[in-house]
Length: 391
Ligand code: SF4
Figure 1 (cartoon, rainbow, N blue to C red):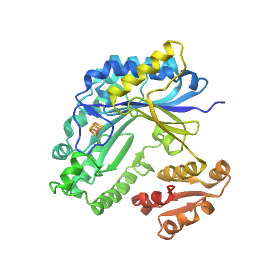
Figure 2 (cartoon, rainbow, N blue to C red):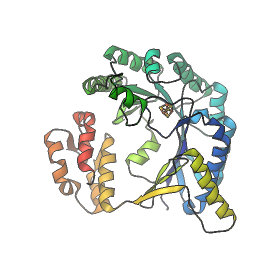
Figure 3 (cartoon, protein in one colour):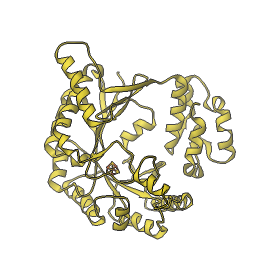
Figure 4 (cartoon, helix red, strand yellow):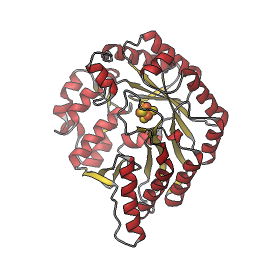
């Protein structure tokens, strides 16, 4: 049977750009939403033949702020996707949402369209922290958005929080975690604030207007949270992700297991048939290029994918390294038997040099045939990953 795949849709629109954000997202471009929705459907149809006979196990609308897209346009996209691809009836279908752009009517509409998972970007339950991050919502709106999702009927709701803000006290972070737990989400994602080059935050840090996030404080907050979420019966299944049993994010697991995915929309990435490739990032450019590909298809010409602007074949070396780097993010780790079966080499022998120091430093361990990060290794994962990446 042909291998199933995951579908990612990138929605690059945001109400305002947050100071720390280096995602492919744009404020003030909402007027493009109707043409963008049409282009996504056309782009999907450009892939119809290539993906024929393969089923879709997960669909993820990420961004940007997908919940900014009015229901009519979400309907256009979902109907277009269902007409084009074989989306399994049990598929996980997620949408990323920001508080402030959600009400119950909208949420009920999403459920009717088949969405069964909502990921809410709360980030903090303190208004002054939200302001320091340039978030456009308040803590109260975050709680209301969560309750609206439950009232509408969403059974699988995730909350995102950011920790390690400059000068954030442990007590303040703990209050945000407790406020999140009080809502009883099914899944929690926690990200350390990082200073990404080219962002307003990076400029503020460089000019001394904002202190850098403190890595020791971040480590303390992370360790406290691991304990707290374990007490609250959450499974820590990936470096940044916790879930109630049965609520892991299947879509993201596709990435960490090196499964295949097709990304549609401006700046989306794909991994198919041993090639990783990316679509033009700028929405206006994306619209132009999809239209060119579409016109060519309509004219009966050769199939073109003008919107795909870069690609890289994944060599066996890169595939091995990806399998370890992505697989180690998951707490279960990488099955050494499966690695041997897939690549015909023993991972511990092949990467003996790269893994030597991480083993000695207690950052990785072998448990029941799986190579995985230790508790300490989860804090210092990047040091392990950097060694495993090809030169
Ligand atoms: S809402 Fe999310 S994607 Fe949009 S600017 Fe803020 S962090 Fe970036």
